[in-house]
Length: 119
Image (cartoon, rainbow, N blue to C red; front, side, top):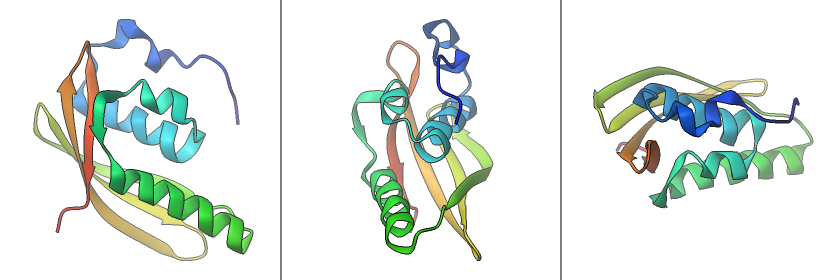
């Protein structure tokens, strides 16, 4: 993976759309696997336990079974300026898609504050 400064984490990009914030957050968590960069895109007191569990599950399966799990997302829809929904897909030899919802707040720029699996 390429490491180094990624322009979308720059403070000058604070006017990003909610969809861009979630897209960047998911890229850091699921593709780059850079928790420090993902934290820059989260609120000060986030409620993202479902996303933490998702990442932990991916890492656990990769370690136990010796394969890489690729993650993609699509269908980002903004319900309001402070909520985005995305379908996360993890691929190994089969495809699994889960629907996720993300809450955002403006804390010196938009940040992800919550992640949930809608029931």
